[in-house]
Length: 441
Image (cartoon, rainbow, N blue to C red; front, side, top):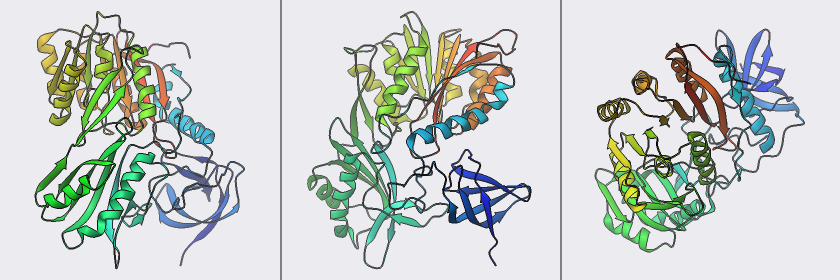
């Protein structure tokens, strides 16, 4: 028999769940807002907490707003649509400060106001959809909340309009795939500058060039398609073009990125991210810079416009090939790019120079703990650490503190509106004797 309880939601924690208390235990309930009084079904009981499933809202919070997506609450993509965008930013800032608590206990540093996204929806230029089969058709959508059941969509309010257009054009041709390919997933990647996009597909069956050719030639928005089944099949152009902000309005950076390589989902906030990293880098033209996990050069190339020499390292060979071509395209001759793991890349830099002035790193969610000691061997005066996973970032910043580097300021950038995720830039400076400095708060 289900156990129903009533509780008041006190706050939203990292991960997007509302938190309340019952009988001395913490209860987490998704899709709730601070100030809600709710009835929840307890679906999981652990030693220190309970996990609830929202049943009814007895008294709604004054902060609650009407979600704009018809599948919000069923789809696992968004967690915060029931809050205004201003309140979403407030929640994320509070969660970030809680994550930073281990650092704040050791020393003071500045946590700057979040850079809000110019668009809180219709911003995603990249998304992965799952494919499933109903009785009579193939559907595309996202995994449901806490499940692998697919919530079918024909459009998503967070997707850039061009990405939604690609999805709709693909749907129109999906019936032609019946009996040929059993589709499993679809990545949509678009370039607003080109007004076109590419799709990456996975499925079961035998790759068929003809159906890809018909897909690309029969649509206005799809310029290239890749299909992974028992073999790999591609048709058209799988490269996407974009323009990044340079050091001045006359120095924009022309980029080409292959669909297989990583790029930021929010181009509007990516510009703000680049501008902030560039500002904090404080380059004069004399500095040596290392950019780890550099991808196709998203941060490397704008920084190269004011660096004496810059090394870019990434394990993705396709991205590194694009980075080299992008450097050539932008006539940047002070760049060296290596396809290597981060630790191997640092070792290669150490063979060329005893020290660098700046290290920039933007690792995956797992962070960069294993390479931090190696980075410190380069004695950078400054490290700019970009992270999309604050708890992992904090773990790594604590380690950098033990290695003699002090956090001086933190800049949140809301790259992912309507979700609990937050991009963060941390400025870390070389300290003295491994002790934390106490910069002005």
